[in-house]
Image 1 (cartoon, rainbow, N blue to C red):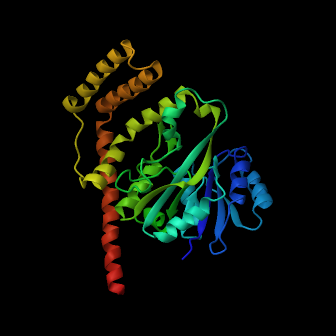
Image 2: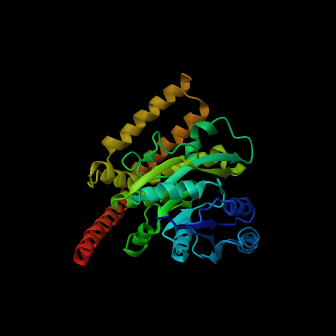
Image 3: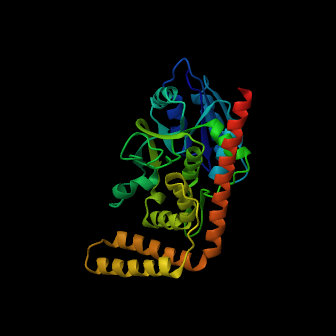
Length: 349
């Protein structure tokens, strides 16, 4: 049985990025046996994204079902939710407004998914297209930009990683509807702050899918280009990314402890185990820099992360507990859904 795909393009002030993104979608090679639709979600843009999207879709995609909708609540999670609500097919493809899908993307995805319906989330291989020549550190850290290999192995990476990045990800719509309709509350929300970028929304989708008993799958056969503008190629930007990981630690840790170790216990933050440990690492880091065993960029990156960890241990104890409780509640909701769903199927049989 062939798959059908709803391609969801979430946009915020995307009028300049959309032409190549939608042109690439219009050039996708399709199988006569599966259908696609395109849904562009304008997420409260203040430029002419809405009008540009309608114009481009009319120009490029007259033979494909498409629509442009507005979502007033800012945030990628909100935009994706609206896109899923508007979709009609069983698989949704999250194509970011700076992703250019290879013409074989859906043919490869269809082949993989038809052979294994237990795949809940499928991700591909991102190739960078940079607005300017990237800095020397870029190749080493390109993974944080949703580029390159997502895993050292291909195919089923459920127990190795538990998620794929959202750029170019294909997800069973039914699984996303469970998230939206069961009382589940996203803890890892993609948002940008003044000093840090808090992300992890893609991780959380993957964790949910694993808890529900489905597979996370990665294939390098699914290729897309990812445009990286110059403002994301600065040290300031990548510092924010890594600092943001400090403040999403508890949520990620709780999900992964449950998925990989079947452990849902809370280990509280304390001075002995956490604060002094980071102080020791800080001293070692200073020594490594003085003895030139680490360059200035990596030194500053690790220094900022360490200092923010210390800040977290000192001032975020109450928040840390609340984050843990929220994730635990989500896991319990998902497990309860599985039990209830299994009983419903038994009753039908």
